Length: 498
Image 1 (cartoon, helix red, strand yellow):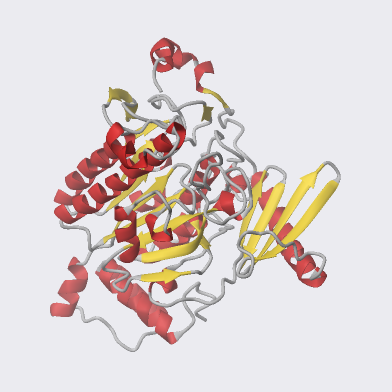
Image 2 (cartoon, rainbow, N blue to C red; image 1 turned 90 degrees about the vertical axis):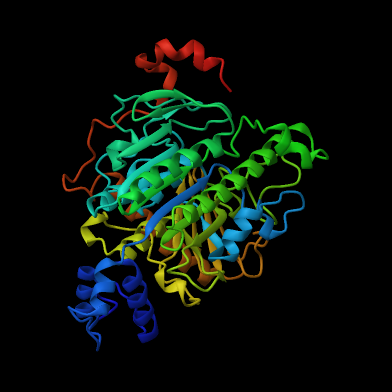
């Protein structure tokens, strides 16, 4: 019965879910959950217990994402140069994922997966710079409908525009507001020091580090809505440590032994980590830190060409479906919901964000389009799960990959030739020993599962998931922003910027 409802099947897991919803949900949601679970207790309609339930709030939610930070670029993984005291503190106070995966190996695809819970090719975002289809259903839309104040700050890159980031036009049909964000201060793509940002279509100039700027602006939004006791959903998408790599002298001071390019790259991460500290302190100052879920990750794997390296001992970099291109830092900090800090090696990814938040908040099933590629991770808040029943699958250009617990299968198509690789990530995290020939039955089983999923993605890509049964033909084309006539008058000034 419980599996049919999409709820935890063990008694302990059901009990822990009830406790979290008691902390996070309003009384009406809790009462419905009690009935659904068939629990033996009922919250009384009067008295102290009912009063506490009626005044309890759903958690605030902050999604934070770096741009091009590799899996190995954190202090808690003992990076030889980079210190990240604020990320380390966040990890030590919450749930740290040692196997957390982006939605794809480049930026726009992962952003589409965060918002929809679906692999990016289902949504029309095949690579960087493609527009998210307006027929998709996003977590921002669902939370806004549930009464959350919604805000987006920083990089967007889901409106079909390529090239260095520029402020988003008010007339853009695919700006953040079109996908559920009431407030937005955003740019089309990557951005760096002294940026020009678009506040709902109005261009504004800022001075300083881009990470610190968008965190400061996000905190203004959080303070404003918190005064009205409105739950908030805040998305902070950094432009760091993506190029052009422009760190301040202070942030490079401890990196003098590196070459200039690496100094600037790692210096941006120093500033970004400091902004994480500012965010956490700001939530405490607002009095909402305990009841705020902060979820941190990166949009894809690390970059090649830097010393020290960016991906630890993993294979591949950004753009690759090997672990170095897909595995990223992942942390959830939520003191009220995850009171005991933990580290997990359970494979999880950004496709799990929407299903997890939907279960915590109690969103209706129709908030999400089907099929979903993720699953709720709420059971992990109290228990370390041993096996993931739904594999994590990836599709990028002519490559496919699937993570099925300790096994990973990779398929590369080149002309009429397809290469098959199978790795045991527990024994071989660097993906150096192909098991496909030695374990042919295992390889065949994994390949079939992956190809069945791939067929499902083809159906989604053709629009079969939408009520219309087809893709809206008016989606924006993927193009360079400088080809958009409305940007013409800004072109000379933009070209003088980093």
